[in-house]
Amino acid sequence: MRLLDRYLIREWLIPFGVCLSGFMLLWIAFKLINELDEFAGVGPAEIARYYWVTLPGNFFIVVPVALLLSLMYAINQHSRHHEFIAIRNAGIGMFRMSAPYLLVGVLLSAGLYWSNEKWLPNGLREGEIIKTVQAEGKENPLGPEWITDVKFPNDEANRIWQIPAFNPATGEMRAVGDNPIIIEWKWDEAQPIRVILAPVAQWEDGGWTFSMAKKVDGSDFLIIDIAPTEGFPEVDPMTRSQTLRLEEFDETPMQIEGELKIAPLFDRRAQKRWSVSLAEIDSYRRIHPNIEPEKKAILNAQYQARLAEPLTCFIVVLIAIPFAAASGRRNAAVGVAAGIIACLAFFMVQQFAMAVGGQLFPHLAAWTPHALFGGLSAWQISRVR
Image (cartoon, rainbow, N blue to C red; front, side):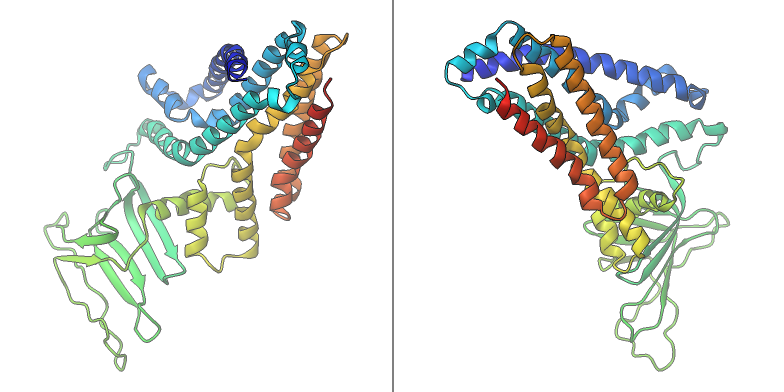
């Protein structure tokens, strides 16, 4: 069986490579035509780099389609030459014979999950930087990687951050003009509200370090908290200082960037493509424990869809096998067409379920199409003769 497994994988791998590269080129060309006006003044090298760093955003469409067509072709070729009949006559069951394809589905699902979690979020950020450099000729004086006017509430720790300029890649904050970094918070209810004004902050070694700098007019920014209200106990006194290290402030750059990504998802007009990672959603839930029910439902729907989406590759494998492997006098094109229609039905049901019941029943909406089509396909595989 190891020899047969290698043979089946090898015969599938070449069609998959051809389909994947061909569909990816077509998809990128289609997007480039639609987005060409957004690249005014951008050189070919930067355009190529943009589509490279945002490549994972295309995987969720291109990979399942390429997998489906390559499987239908490879399996149908084996069936036409009666190779599956010979294998079955040797006493090998249909599920064991399909094991290499099922393993491919699992590995591609794992790869798609990794791509969505690790590559896609950073790629989308780099892609936006490439676009904004040339947007209307307005370049951020600090650099395109800086995000300006960031407001970040941490409900769990009762802290509010106002950040004039923030660099998520380096974990650095800066004042802009006369607008310093402002953090308002309380250590506990027995303490008054405190305020830090600082020109520079850097995330390092699991905490924030605030430091002094000069304004344009030569005067100093202050790192200072408001004087405690009379009658309150001064448990943790603070004074003016050149540098201030606060490891209690555990808001990471990833959490702040996640806040910026997740906030637009609550706008009904926003694009509903999953551009945030599961880690960012978990972090958002942790620092906003009392989130409104409507926003909580949207996040739950995003979370379950994010988990279920990579398994599309595995379901595609289950759907393709029985339609392409069935032997008999039936025209091969009929089986291929039926398999493609079944996969299209799966994609449509998947999107329809998330659109209709995603916010009300996120678990059912995300996983019912997978369970339904996966179960029916496994049953069909068991009946292949």
